[in-house]
Image 1 (spheres, one colour):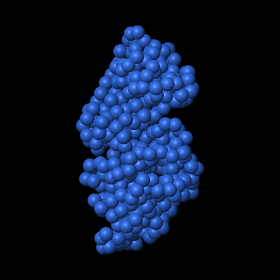
Image 2 (spheres, rainbow, N blue to C red):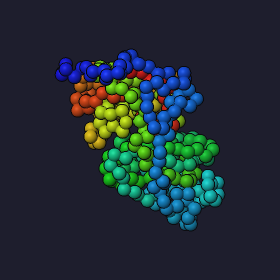
Image 3 (spheres, one colour):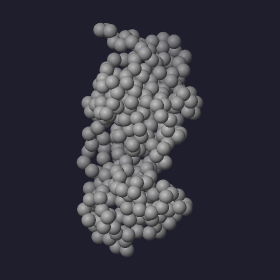
Image 4 (cartoon, one colour):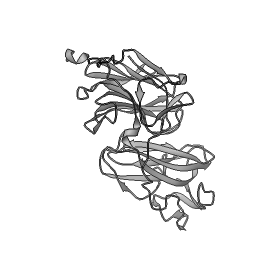
Length: 339
């Protein structure tokens, strides 16, 4: 343990002192800076810029249907498929009932951008069944937090189901309009209007403008109600207060089912990502804190509702002094604390 690295000087002009907390229901962002961050309805929100839709060939599934399958989609397995006039947009949509695990309907693959943050979404509705087994899925073998990112289609009315991920290579990204996620209890769903976008990296961050006075500061947040499977997270020990390329990310989102919170710990070092604590989940607890808790200057633990998740991790190669948050979609923040 390097004792000299415990303390980082407060900057000239006063910096700021710990502990430091923000309750966004009071309407102030304090020392947080972010190009797209805003307080809406008493929570911190963020709406990063997006690329044009990367799915350029018939995202609305209006092409010819043959034997019930839209020509735009590639089918795996033997699901029951049908053209539906119950469309979200346009005049056609794709109906799907799985017959086995990993039955899928996929759009064409697209090359990833290493280090790119993405969101994939489909408009979908469930018309029969109660298993919660039909899912929107996006796959890239080298993506984080996991290679296969999914979110269930559960609503009886059309809802936009969104899943987020970080590309760590130029490997192909495969956007699946729908995937069967179970071996039994198959639901019938209708999907329409797929979208895959890359997010503007600089817009993701809401950071404390000053460096932390020391590396023993806990950084934690109270997540707001979970609304999608995009990534939000705590940023700690970052090397800059805007567009850092070295930092810790303690992220959260929901996956399936929607009453559970999923979280994990990753690090980005000079743009290269590594998973430190694999994604796990727990039943959502109202007003619980998610936190990065330092053990010493080079070691941290991850906690949810004051319970440690996994074991302490060495992060000596993440030497920065800035902290804040990243919000890439609708999973907003109620409160933020460092100290």
